[in-house]
Image 1 (cartoon, rainbow, N blue to C red):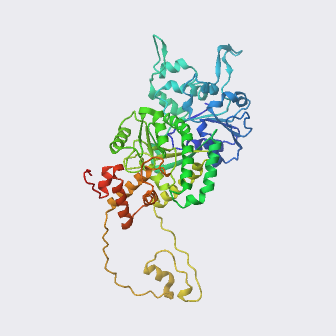
Image 2 (image 1 turned 30 degrees about the vertical axis):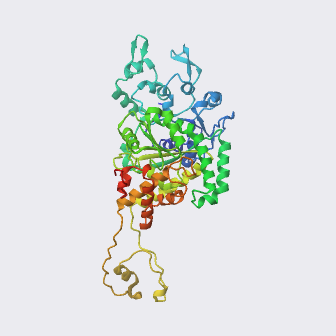
Image 3 (image 1 turned 90 degrees about the vertical axis):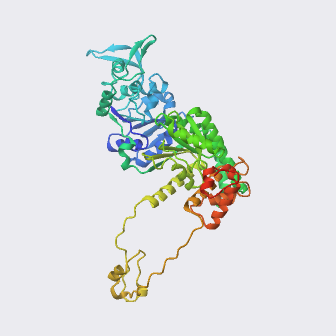
Length: 569
């Protein structure tokens, strides 16, 4: 056996596990990593994070002829042919093939670059064994690791190219024998058909007993956090000039942007540049979704601009539904229902603010952010469309960012803030040990450092003895009942309505004609970011919802205590 097939579901740590193999085996010092182009920089980041041997690492760059002379080389499938000679000049200790379902078709160029091409003739050696000659051989390695979260037993034919590498003397030794046993192969009018499946239980048992490891999220759910987040940095080849413009614009207006004024020329200019970057990023988002669908059943995608929503819907057609600031109430409900119930609906696309509240998308536990929001709370709200009652899996969140973009810096900050908030909210409070006290010789209360933790009278007396004269207990005052003038449900409904209106506007004046008007944009967006409202804020928010009622669902208006004449709430 020459290797292992690691087939865990997405989000269970296949990347650090494979790096751990390198760490655990001292003889491994020469590693080739082959992956999709969109994952190269992420592999570099993860290797630097988990590697304990301090191996040097190089990434094959697009448009460059040189091949890295480093201990670890990361290359994408699409350029394997270009570096065929350089790859085969080295004997790799370990070759890792990420997203190995890319190799399911034996006749594609990238598969042949991995498994090699055999000549038609076979040569009998002196000892009587048969040797098949290659036009060019497989990628040479002492050990192979194939990583993929895609179940492979539904169409066993797609597994055979990997079996040729990983089990050449067993399941991968003879395709026809394998096909007759596990692919329900038969000869029809137009030749052999290998697209079927048979004896799957037997195949599953052999795979697991010999070289395949597969865990599902439900199998290890207790060991996983409720949410897992990853920032995936994409190569920005060809967009260097645009990203430099984005950087210069941000640097120019950084101080103005910190004020949070959404109507200043600085914010408008920054919004226009970010919109240009978002549009240029569309092909990268589409490519990543296509790759993810090889492994996942359903995906929720959150973006910011309407142009990005329209482009994604055009790219995925009837397998996609969407919600943005232009969506009518009945269209929102229909989109959610179809995504939740229709197996043919694979993708939900929504803008972060318009689709980030008030809906349930638990049919998926995988979230992709193609764009970001300035406010971490809005990103968390969008994540929680999947992380709600009814979700049985850990939610896996990926932020797609271009290398060198403003989003690359923002995403890491947002994820760090979210993790801090999650820890503060969700980590149970563990009682600490006894507080530290400063002991002094002068027996006066003024020189004793009192604890900053809460203590009972008995605990204080035990620690300080007669150093402290406790005042006598006073009778408890009668509680004063404070009556709120609005309910929690009304408060949340007003906040929901404000956030929906804020999500309909991209932050620059008159770019979309939706959401708040010029006069109300600044105040409306400030209120939309609040977690709770004072009475005055609530009244102003209600007034805004009443003013923009035509853009809001009836259910939100009703819950906010707003009844419009002639409008059913």
